[in-house]
Amino acid sequence: MDPNPNRNRLKLDFIPFLAPGHLIPLCGLATLLASRGHHVRVITTPSNAQLLAKSNPSLHLHTVDFPAREAGLAHGVEIMSKVDDFNKAANFYRAAMLLRGPIARILEQQPPDCIVADFMYPWMDDVANNLNIPRLAFNGFSLFTVAAMESVKANPALLPSDAAPFVIPDFPHHITMCAPPPKIATGFMDQLLGIELKSHGLIVNSFAELDGEEYLEHYQKRTGHKAWHVGPACLAPRSGEERAEKSVVSENECLSWLDSKPPQSVVYICFGSMCRFPDKQLYEMACGLEQAGHAFIWVVPEKKGEECDKEEEKEMWLPKGFEERNKEKGLIIRGWAPQLLILGHAAVAAFLTHCGWNSTLEAVTAGVPMITWPVQGDQFYNEKLVSEVRGIGVEVGATEWRVVGYGEREKLIGRDCIERAVRRLMDGGEEALNIRRRAKEFGEKAKEALQEGGSSHDSLSALIAHLLRLRDSKINSLHSF
Ligand code: UDP
Image (cartoon, rainbow, N blue to C red; front, side, top):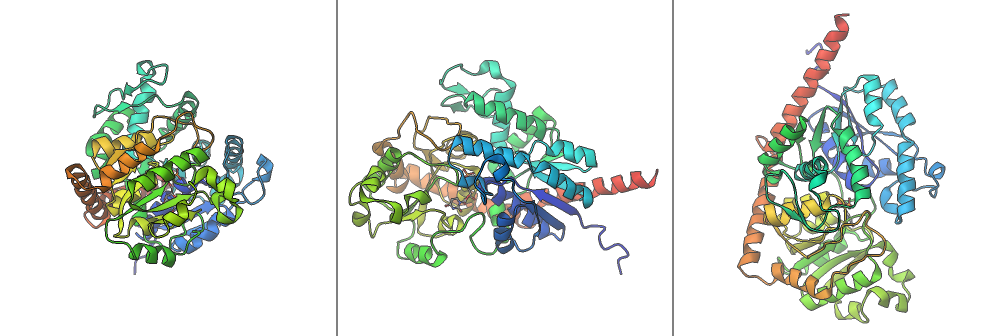
């Protein structure tokens, strides 16, 4: 019998930020580590823990209360997708900062071998250093995007002072961005990226073939920081679809609607968990979809629910008679949709997306080409990876780089642009065929990456070996005192 059965077993604490785009992938990666036999604990708040207990049963959960009231939010708000204005978002972040004390106490009482924490908690650096526990950082971005952000951060003098296009400085590909990111957003982001670089390394929810070896090398050479590609997290074992919020349609309802459509005939439209377009933009979207003439599943915010929609209010965002005319052709989901299930269905041929990294990677993994419509943050860089670098999507033509996903816009994407982009992918033709072929190939590569001998599988093994060595050398140095 092995005298020390825990020799090869790590104790890992995962601390996800409380927004679906952060929580879902980090818990997916936690599940991948648990599936290798390690003891993985997730520290989160009660209502998030309740959903995780169902979707990721292999994780141990430890809860801390979320100080919503202390930060001026309604009691019960525990996930950032429930706030929809800038001030509430700032309050939410303040509440997340207040988690430092309770989380530090848990880590002190039962110290793990390693902390894997979201970079949105900048205080984690101090906490981990004080306890002498190695910390891995997670930011939820692709490494292509982190490398682009680092290049932009290092070369402020090369950026235009107004909203003019610029080429990403000192970068493996020649990429022209529509405008520099808003200063207020980069100020915040640069600070977080700086603290991230003080961590032991970065774990990336992507796979090496998608980001490209050249970006891994570029990042490691420029920053001297180590990165491990261990995704896609969406392929981690899970039960059911409810990963951060409860779906408003049942899986069966969605599946039987999709089953009734021919293969490769449906456009799926969803803008993630944090983006809320103004009514007039939704109206243009509806017109563009109708003009393009293809079947669709369109996810709109919960507040667009039928029961609270008076007819005249509805007509602000939906053309008169739209639902009646598109009864057969379209399914509107008001609220949270089972996205992985939809993307994985054979009827789905294209994804009109805001290019949040999870949505992007989920589409890549499902082999579904994208129509890209970025709104804020990393989404504009992700769009370039999809459209220009990997050739698995077409751009709708969005150029308004916003600080947050809600609020009035300065620019409107017109119905004709939307129709044109949908037709470019859906009406056949050589360009569309090539994009579709490449998307399928990347879907295969994504699955291979996590199989034995695949790039992410090997990278995860290397990371585990590295963490075991780190733990053992810490134990040895303690014994030598
Ligand atoms: N998501 C979902 N149903 C929805 C909206 C979003 O399942 O109706 C999931 C989606 O699959 C992804 C995450 O929420 O895993 C959104 O993350 P992403 O990075 O794409 O965008 P964000 O919400 O952070 O802007």
